[in-house]
Length: 243
Length: 289
Image (spheres, rainbow over the protein chains, first blue to last red):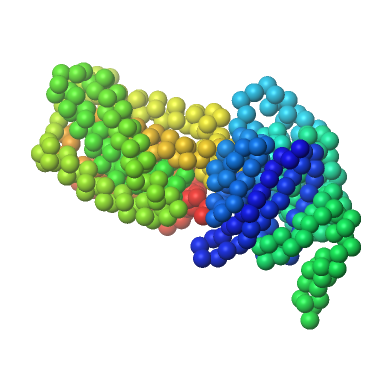
């Protein structure tokens, strides 16, 4: 069943157009990824889906309901949650407060407390840092907290924006395991945006390739891996920088 | 010594009113980045509403509640009608507030004249505590302020709404991603700040006569207190208000009362020279995406 359907979305800031006529779908219990070089418009697309950026055109349909242009709190309430780039932990608030904020849209107090326990079991580091301020955590710990905070909303769609950014290879492995566990443990579908193509290709089953704000190709991961365009975009980008 | 205690109580009672303004200014700035200089006029409107109600024969306490309500509704209307359109550019909100000062002052002058207004003291008792004469009305002002500020403080630090408010102050966009309806919180903070100004206005006219121009000096002092504590920092505003009250009281007690108006600014300059972010560290206003 199609959970999230983006059709023909165009976005921009001021005079600049970022995304042009982007369409994609996300099925239930699916992990998909949007790949593409820096500045391709991946983050803007995610911000548009959750309503932080108003689209210039196109529609965002979640579970059959048109949510185009609605504010982020409505999207979160419906179950579409973004874990933003750069983690954006509330630095002045404790780890526990950060987790409970993730569940703001929920009113089932007892279940929220139970979910805090679940998160602390799934991300053991959060249990030990429960009363510490979010800002005192390391980058990797903050990323765990950001994902856990996102899951506290009991999302049906979790949008992850560059979760591996700035993390050591060891932590990237951990993030990989976590993303693979999200579907099984929490029943959420995942839309992953990553610059780390290795990570993205290892967790997703389908992918979209974005360049200059457009989707240039899409398909199952196995097919994408073999495409010459993929290699050109990633390897070509590297050689360009080197020369 | 007796005089000194009386003067400190006097200082604290005025500082109470100023603290109520500072709390409103600091809460609104913290969430929206808007420095609402018309907050003093909100207070003045609170005084005028109290005055009108008392003139109609309503006792002080219900008159005070009416003032709180009227100014809160006014704050709601102004946020919905004006300030919400300046959220992406808080400087515009500041300029709007400067315009509002003139509008509010002149509306009051138009209907009620420019002369000063006073009400009979709601509490006329003077207690004699071993030679120290304490005006009960001043004690009332201080106690009411302590109670209301404490309630605000508990709400912000302990409740679910307070937690969401603090999150929105720290990072508005991310707070929205958590499902927090940030726009509604902004309206709510305007209403809360306005209600506090309405209360301050009622308390002020219980102490002194009020003119349509009273708001100006009061907001300057309230702003100085908010800056001293760290703009956007509630605890800072309360502590700075307390310090101001004690300093004003002592200085009057030692016979320097003609300098009263200078103390708030002198203290502010001193504090900001030593700690540019205020005593408790302020916020820089909302992050602009």
